Length: 495
Image 1 (cartoon, rainbow, N blue to C red):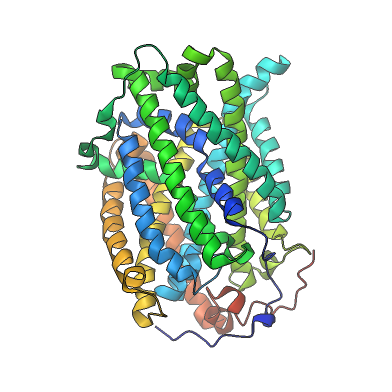
Image 2 (cartoon, one colour; image 1 turned 180 degrees about the vertical axis):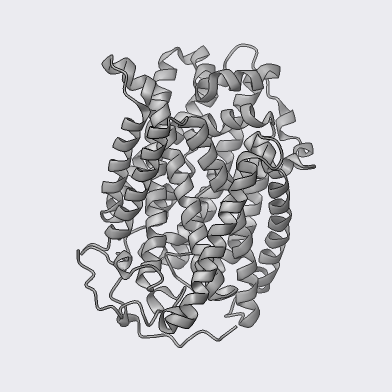
């Protein structure tokens, strides 16, 4: 592997995100919004139970949280030396090789787009009956999804501090609602905890891979703290605090709320989840709070999905910006507004999302099963693969130069996480049919890994093409603000 090119002067980059804008709480809110606590507790838990028939979600959350806390040790250590909004892309580029880094960027964009699309589908499916009841007219789900898309597009095209304020309010509100409803369910007559959902037996055998992918879906977005590193205040401290605190708090909320929901369902929980879907959690709380709990819950579930789509819009946009800044994508993607917003990348992403929604609307596909569940589980599977590849990259990066990092940060923690993630990736691949509730080798269990592999391979080949056709761009891959080619186009940062 060729040595990294010399650093250029920091002032050589004209394409930059707005710096010194976000503190730990703001970044934590962005992370928590992408994991969407209320969405996971209602839609993900109930749909997962109904589709897979597995009740080990709470223990899977604990396992995934532990794995993530181990993974981020090396992940954050690498972030200290490679501050880049491209995160996975930059780390794999500098750790394993630039062609694989480009493949990773395409893969990451696909994962975040899957999550973004699942939010649009879930929002439309959820709000369709509510809006129809409120105004007395039948409004198609896709109309509501397009309305949400426009909101996400507007916020994503403006400075991050604007969407930050929206995310803080929404995520705090929905987290409080999850805790209040969970307490209400516990006060229902005859409630007893089903500790079987916490049994370690759920983590042995083939079903472990399925549960872990579902767990990864629940935590989708926790790695996004590093995506905002160029816009954070005191990056070294801010990113570390935001990541560890958010993973720990969200894990506690998930375990508690999902265990309460499964326990309240008793022996018929699978049948209840199948029939009631996302309303299961709200209906359980209604036993204590009344039917108003269902209406309020649906409304805030909708706003929670809006928060998640804003967070994923921001994350995917920053990947597009990072690639455009370095010339891997057209440089127009790397342009920002006066206030540092990556407007072009955001608007292009919104246009692509609109095209996908149009296809679903015309085809008449189910937005909940064929968009929300398919998108979220595909995204969760893809993120598991991204974690695995990045963990390997961390080991390779520090093997060449310790850069002052301790043995735990640069080798032991990344090595442990790599071994665990490789095993879980194997279990996930071999049990995709259970995850998608299809026969082995059919439907999404067959084409999802093929499509994702093709995306990664396509990006890797493109990276090799850049090596021979645009060597200056190739040398700058993954170097962010230190890329000598980032300002080579001479384009203004002002739109």
